[in-house]
Image (cartoon, rainbow over all chains, first blue to last red; front, side, top):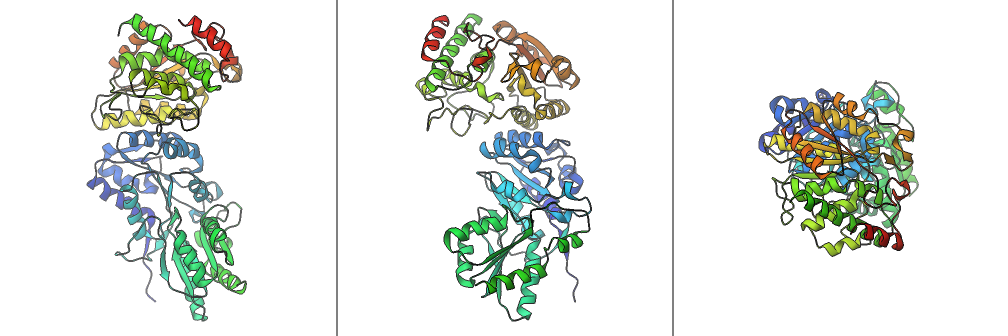
Length: 314
Length: 269
């Protein structure tokens, strides 16, 4: 079997920033002392005048980004997911979202696949937080190819953006000619008996579940929902009508994230049996990313079992 | 504008604050009246700005980080021509362009939405960095509350502004000595506040925040400082200009009654 190519979404971000920086002098980058890890250091090296390390002070970084945006800059503010969201939530909420400033928050090290560092560094509630903010767009790309396109889309679309990236490298799922559109889910596999809606690294797990299920003679649709807000209502309702059962999958608490967003659409339009795969209202722990995905029941096998369960409930 | 004219203008702003707040029935008279002279000097004398072109790229910027002083800012914006003066009487009412705390989406001339304390100095830092980056000569002014500097974010911003050598940034601390729960020194003391800002790498000036000449001189001095931002500690009186409000913390967040309004307006003629 051919070895899969693994590429970091944060690496794709670092490269995308370089391209953006060359194209547009208004692009500036801020980081909070983790520029090596978020890959913003690459931008800093090529454009030292347009890079601002704000130190371990994320709240201030978000305010400074807002101030830069008022002057026509396109600021990308980066940190680890945990520190670039809940740590500075009110600054994002008021100085950026309420003030409607054109700030792009791009975080790496989301979810439990941060791994060995443990719970203090594993953001599990960030999608819920960012999704609750008026004016905010929330993107969770599934691989490096989508990451690049998402970063470009954010740079060229006015308004606050949140892009969630990971520490772990992801297998490439999409092709270079993939058309990314903000607010549009994409059907990766057609199917008839149930639909799996996933985001981020769980898209790969959803595809694994799909393959196992097809070997068992069960036909499931797989949707990559990389825009969690604004959520693509049409594709959710269509999938519910066509397949009659939905499973969501995210590396995030099941409270307030993708699963909740999908459930909100379904209960108000076309309720069908549904199950959310995600972190079950608990904090993370130390371990290797693969061990943690198994322990927290975030594998293709867990999605597979959830699909069987929702089909039974139809 | 001469000093006596600025003094008259400040009095006019105070009259508007009293009228607006009495009409609104809620709001913050004490902290609005204490920062009037600072903001009046900025809008009527110091700042390069064009009310007919609020987004002019080369304008000086002002942020009222202590957003609850909004009536003082709104009165200055109206009286310099950003919007009709009659609008001031719609303060805090449904669909008004004058929200309870400054909202840049609604009010022409408001440079940043504020109200939750601690955030304005960071935004001002971003504006000042942008000015340096674009080699523009505009200046950025920000008014902080004294209680506001209890917020940790203020000190994060203080460190960053000094690190990036933002000599185009001037902050005022409206030192009226009170916060909602009482005297600052009884809640969480901020002294020695001059030493604190100095140790953060700022130029620090101390003035009487109600004497126009001292305010203008301090701003001039700040313009000449190179390589670091300036903090002007402005000693003020909460409720300044209205005898029964001065130093009376009851008027932190309670609007004057109709009777109190009339008494106040008589004093301010």
